Image (cartoon, rainbow, N blue to C red; front, side, top):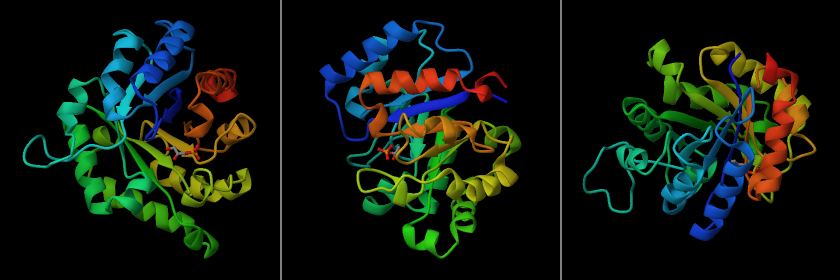
Length: 255
Ligand code: 13P
């Protein structure tokens, strides 16, 4: 098994000073070696990306990403940022298809597919987010729904390309302040389905949605889960550091 991926998206939070403080603190704790068996990643706003990269330094074990990127390399796409631009500013990873972007910004399965291809073409890691609504979940359709979202973005990739992809399963009903944390039992079936289809064929299968210091260890223990994608619990550095340490101490980190 590869490393446990433990990352956070800052979503639309943090100005430059706060981003720098966080990154400097992370650098002081992790240095150049990081934690054995754990791959940390941070996804700031576009505006804070280069500053975060500068504070972490060139040899940091922390990967950096963007929360979205356009599929085209350049051109008349007002307000958008391309994968080459993101790469230029320090991104190694591109988050694609987060439910907030699907719900509010017109992201579709078709656009996630284009963005996965663009990220791969430029050597960045696509972090494809999938997840179902409460209604789909209550209808017992979670597994087929998320498999369809994943297939829509990933079908047709070569094994080598698929091997560079990260998938984050984030049930919409479990995300954010209004979310209800998913139980380990609720997550077994979706991860069994993802494991059958993608286990060992991608860089990792992450869980996201109300991850916190109390549930992280149990969530990492679920079959096929190889990482956590965290919002609120990692927005302050001490919370993120504790999650990283917890992951490093997890039996799967040594597997
Ligand atoms: P929360 O951990 O705040 O629920 O957010 C999860 C998420 O959407 C990560 O991308």
